[in-house]
Length: 101
Image (cartoon, rainbow, N blue to C red):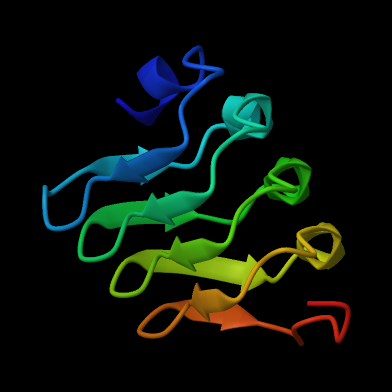
């Protein structure tokens, strides 16, 4: 389901919280380079955060709490230098958040 949004390259805000969305975040998420807000909290998103998440350099708010994510936080998240709100709570992710954000 999330894959269908990765072709909307002019998209600036996407809020799909609490919709029961299942599956992994697609690698093509990196295509959404104009995205400023991404809210995917309270779904059933699983797998790991793809490295391509770091391509969302205009992202200011990223909320993906209350899912079933696992694995390490990718270092590329540090490329999101405009990010001022990040919520990864209530998942099973490990690692540190780069100080560059």
